[in-house]
Length: 197
Ligand code: MN
Image (cartoon, rainbow, N blue to C red; front, side):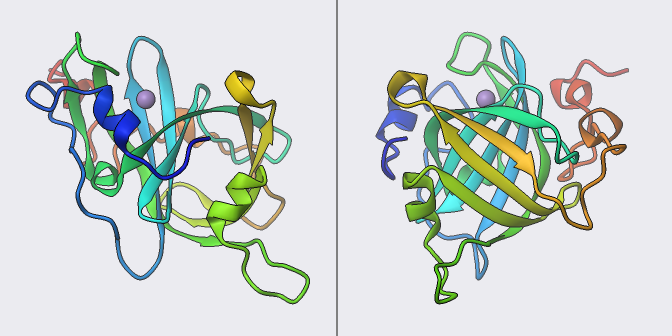
């Protein structure tokens, strides 16, 4: 996973054509934030993003997150996104990079759970560099601990996103299918798209 640079992000996009943000803002607030964007591109996936050192570290999760600790969800690393992207919901023109509809499926603050032997927090950037991060999500749909673990390296770099065992773990809940609407606007993908009745 590359360092905190937005050059890959900017290189892939033509900001005269897409309404996605070019970036500028580097801090969200007191607590770091996460956002999960449902992205109906050539293939539907969920973009999982964590605020780390002024950018949104990003992974594409084909099946979306689970609330069942037994489910390991593949997370493919993608380029860092600017902080402003956390507020983006809309349509990327079909012929542009990532063309399709983007919905803010969940968002909220998160807390880094990784500490060293003395109880000091290990910075999230270091956790990701080391290939293992644990964090507590305070979303509208997702709550509690999650772990991201790297498998493979180089072009085969992949991660697994797994719910940790805690009070918010629930094998029967399946928010990806039962809670399909935007937490920002209450809209479905079809409504954002303008296809709805
Ligand atoms: Mn995407």
